[in-house]
Image (tube, rainbow, N blue to C red; front, side, top):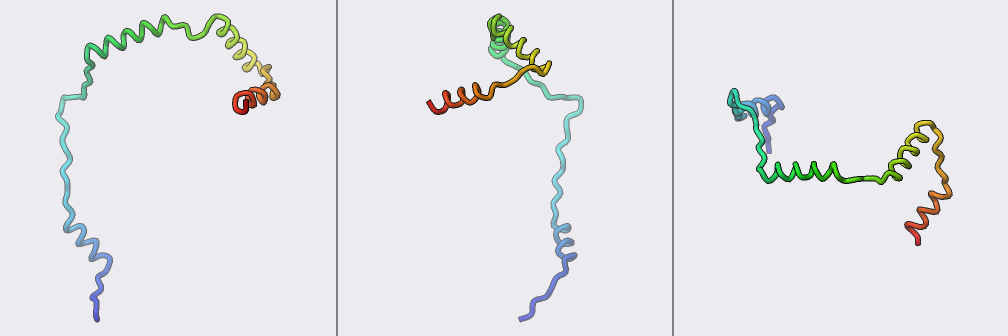
Length: 95
């Protein structure tokens, strides 16, 4: 049995000959994308903003403690007690 060989270039030429080009869509000139929100969505966003301002995330005592910790960390004075960390891990996961 004899099989005629075809070189690689012949395959490429056949591919290019059968290639179909897809035209790109044209963008309408002078127009841009727009997003509009419903009145309900806008009211929801406004109400969340009002509530967010009124919520106290941390008490005054917690804010003071956080400020103290940040200060100590920045000064390099904050030390972690490894025994306390280990005890908390054991309490949380093994008891």
